[in-house]
Amino acid sequence: MAGTRRIITTPEDAQKMALDTAHWYILGRTRSAFERFKDGLKTLGIYSAMVENKELFLDVMCHHDSPMMAENIKEAFQPSLHPPGSNRRSTENLLLCLWENFIFEAMDDESDVSLERILFFATGVKSIPPAWSEAQSMSSVPA
Image 1 (cartoon, rainbow, N blue to C red):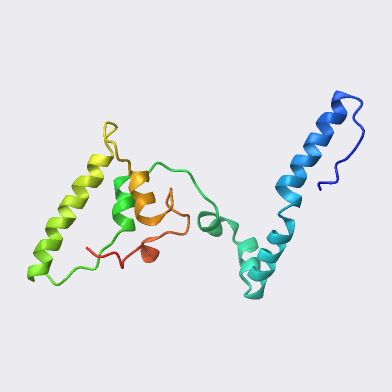
Image 2 (cartoon, rainbow, N blue to C red):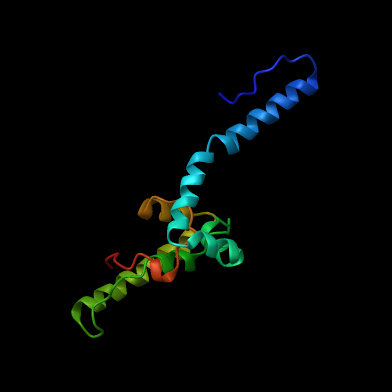
C-alpha cells in the first residue's frame, strides 16, 4: 500500500524501505484528511489567519503536556450556584468544600485516586484539551 516495494540486497536498502514506509504511514496515509481539514479552514479565512499568526494558534491547536494541578480541575468544573443566603446555597457551599478537599487529597502520592482519573471519569478525556479555557469550561455541571 505504501508503494515501497523493492528488492533488498543491502542493509541500506532495508533501512531506506523502512524510512519510506514510515514516511508514508505518518504523512502519506493522512494527507487527504489533512488537505480536507485545510480546505475547511480556508472557507472562513481561518487558515490564512493561522499562517500569519502561528504563535497565537499554537496554544489552541497543539497539545502541551503539563502536569495536572488541582486548579485545573477546579477551573474545569464551575458550577452555577443559587443566590447567597438561600437554603440550597448553604448545601452547595458544603458540597464545594468537600469537592475541593477531595481534589487536594487526590494530589497526594499515596491516594488511590489521581487528578487525571477524576478528569477522565467526569469528562472522558485524560488531559485538559488545548482549547479548554475558562469560557469553554463545563459551567453546566450541577453543584
